[in-house]
Image 1 (spheres, rainbow, N blue to C red):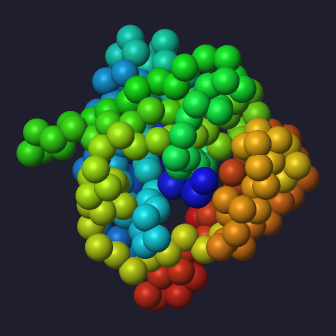
Image 2 (tube, rainbow, N blue to C red):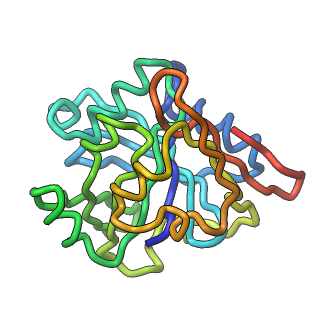
Length: 212
């Protein structure tokens, strides 16, 4: 298991403006993602080093957004003003999580401009909704060259996170030490003052460290 990406819900002025603000601070040219038809969402990508990326996501006026947990989560966070939605762990096999949660993983996908389709399965968004400190899990079905981190070469690295919550709680959720997943990062766990969740993410950029 490894950290795959962090997800930021669009703020009131919309997906493009939110993405540009983050991109300017990180010094990354954003990449258009696409529509997730099953979730009723749309995203833009900020590729990082180490097979990781930042996803900036917005909800669409689409029936899927009201039915899919991910669409519900994005809508709720954006309506609260936007900001960090959560973090996502890439796993080699979703079966243990399907067994633990008693439900199958959900397929996701979006189409590239050249017609190729990025495909994956994910599970655990309901856990994120009920307890936002928890990551959800993802497994990509497409070739590695289509991974969002490969969309553009950058030299910006994710270096740390501040999570309001408990490492013991997340360890129980993942079925293994959370330190093994986040071992390369400087992670601060703080007692929740209100709702737990992902509070801040730090990056190493060519112009110095940046925390958002």
